[in-house]
Amino acid sequence: MQNKEIPYKIYLEESEMPQYWYNVRADMKTKPAPLLNPGTHEPMKPEELAGVFCDELIKQELDNDTREYPIPQEIRDFYKMYRPSPLVRAYCLEEKLQTPAKIYYKFEGNNTSGSHKLNSAIAQAYYAKKQGLKGVTTETGAGQWGTALSMACSYFGLDCKVYMVKVSYEQKPFRREVMRVYGASVTPSPSETTQVGRKILAEHPGTTGSLGCAISEAVEVAVSNPGYRYVLGSVLNQVLLHQSVIGVETKIALDKYGIKPDIIIGCAGGGSNLGGLISPFMGEKLRGEADYRIIAVEPASCPSLTRGVYAYDFCDTGMVCPLAKMYTLGADFIPSANHAGGLRYHGMSPILSQLYDDGYMDAVSVEQTKVFEAAEQFARVEGILPAPESSHAIRVAIDEAMKCKETGEEKTIVFGLTGTGYFDMVAYEKYHEGRMDDYIPTDEELAAYRARLPQV
Image 1: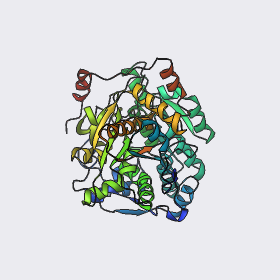
Image 2 (image 1 turned 180 degrees about the horizontal axis):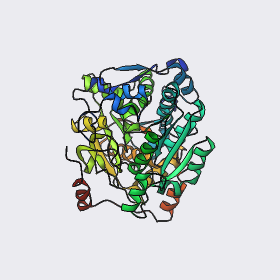
Image 3 (image 1 turned 45 degrees about the horizontal axis):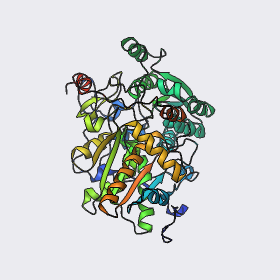
Image 4 (image 1 turned 90 degrees about the horizontal axis):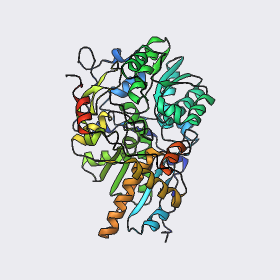
């Protein structure tokens, strides 16, 4: 039965919304390794990044010391359209599982983009507009980031050019059309519209693309068009900074009811959702104020943390971006076309990579058929059709809850529900019709990609 003291949905008052973004790097004992110039292998200087990123975002990207960044009023006003987002007690799921565990999820899907991505998209568009730019370019995988950025650019009157991973472009036409509703141009990647796109197609005929491919094309367009800059929806330090609004809100809501989580779970592709959710909790852990078990969940078909190597690598397949030290499968790794969802990136956020390497969090990989099994189980009892990405976290949350059932432990589990899956019905259809398999790259395949890592 429901504990009447804790409602199904914990909503914060508007006055309780976070006033700042939290920069976890300020509390990290070992800072993330710097971005390197791909030509000289020297740390990137602000002026070297100025042709690619917005000026203020460069400052945020390179700042390892400022703990709190005040959220500009214009961004906070936009946040009010869909924030604070609810922290939901999964009473129905708990009852269905017959587990003593208490399960909560932070739901980020209550906006038109359908995901958490809008938290950073509006910030990046704001700084581009403030700088007087004409527009921005970007990549998108499943489409949530492209949708969010197109909304943010529309709000500020900026042009938006999106390169969408080809397999998602073809599988998710409705997500593509939402971007166009908001005025964005959407190009399947790799494409014939850029030099790097043509090069990738020549080397990999018929490829279905990857985020690494799309990043290369978006960067090329940004640097070759005056008045444009490139913006990224994950991986970068600045993105995790903006997404910390998720974790700060979650902690305020939990503290309001005296709830302390034992386990915090998030899906992990590039790291924006997981990094945002865990940031204030990780800060407490780093400062020795509290302890939590933090679990990153990634797809078995793209397992950068669990099977990658911690090394400097290119952030993109075209190898035109700076080198980042991260857990990586290799810049030219392209997941199977059967991979469902947006967790298709070959590397992991440098922040999360450093924290994982230092032992502050765990990582697991899960097969996608088990992910969709958990997604349906969740949808049938909690009433939300989850995105495939979020469903990785659901899978492990259910697994951890069932462990509690076996041991009788009453652990409190919090996971991130990044968004809804209503534009992912092709993937659900494949699952229902038995056309989805659990492709897992072999050790030999991964070794071949690792052999091509840059020598730094």
